[in-house]
Length: 77
Image (tube, rainbow, N blue to C red; front, side):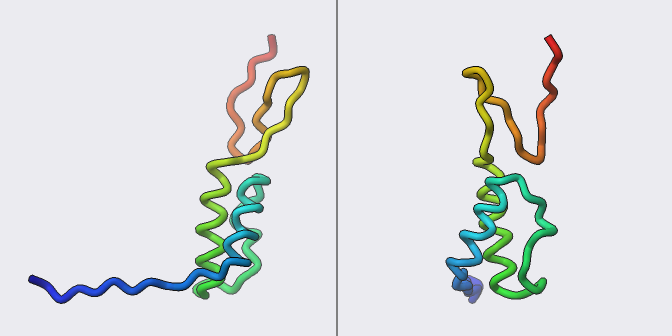
């Protein structure tokens, strides 16, 4: 059996929340304010990806319209 160890990295809760909120708002990952390669940048990125999955939308006339970064095709009917 191999002697593999798993190392857990503590995530900064502030950076995680900031990234999550950025993802919810559809902001690009280029907005990460932390220096690349740091634990804070990693936490921000994990929060951002999680927030992308739950992006905010706008409701017009009782119909929800997606307003995130990845917009679906909307036909003009």
